[in-house]
Amino acid sequence: MPTSRSIRRLRHFVTGNPRLYRLAKIIRFSLTLGPWRPLIIRSLQRLQHNPPLPKLSEPTLFPSLDIESAVSSLDRLGWAPGLTLPPQYVDDILKYVADSPEAVLHDTHEKSEALRRIVFDPQVLSVVRRYIGTEPLFVGTALWKSRIAPRATPDYRGRTYAQRFHFDVADFRSVTLFIYLTDVETADAGAHVLIEGTHQIKSMREIVTPYLTDTLAQAKYGDRIKVVTGPRGTGFFEEQTIIHKQALPQQPRVALLITYSLRRRGAWG
Image: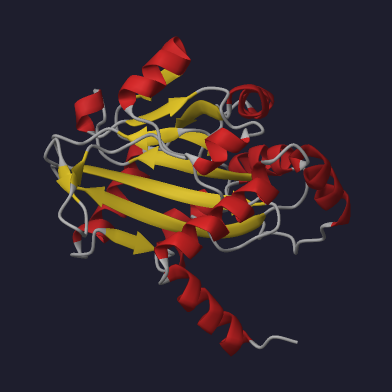
């Protein structure tokens, strides 16, 4: 029986070898996104017995959120708009963010009452439960502070690239709630960009080439590409396996991400 220490060593060895790491990701993505995905999801929905998430005594922050419409949109398109966070909660979270020099703050709901209210909001959890198909696992929160970016960003090897379309794999089924905490009225403000309907089963070609340039995305998907804009407080749900990217921001942007999954707490990348 492998120990946690041996598993950590194996993971470190795999991630330290680029070719082996890529092969491992392809195998993992194939298992999670292949043609058997719906069958596995249905089986896990029947068998999974996750502990119930906390019930808040406070009323919902999103009384206008249409649960049926949001779940339907997630199923069909892979994302769902329809949330607006009240201004006082935006202000509270931004005050918390301003005190930290870090670009990404994880699991801040443990220190922020405003964030805790959002994470366990009854309307939000109703949408998540319906989409996940069982009691979900709460994965965590992240506050992303995006600063003004050049059109080409150097990677760790000094190469440059524009941010590319891609998909993430956190679980067989997972959903992230995004909330803009600053105005994102245009793409240049760091808008989230997604391609509707790409959250379904992936082909092997898509699995082995998980990145798309803007040119290829436009040629293949055309008007299915959606730029999500809105004033601060704008929120939307997204299935993580949808193809997406963040437009390079030409002004500072702060966004809150809250992730829930069917069976796995950790992100797969």
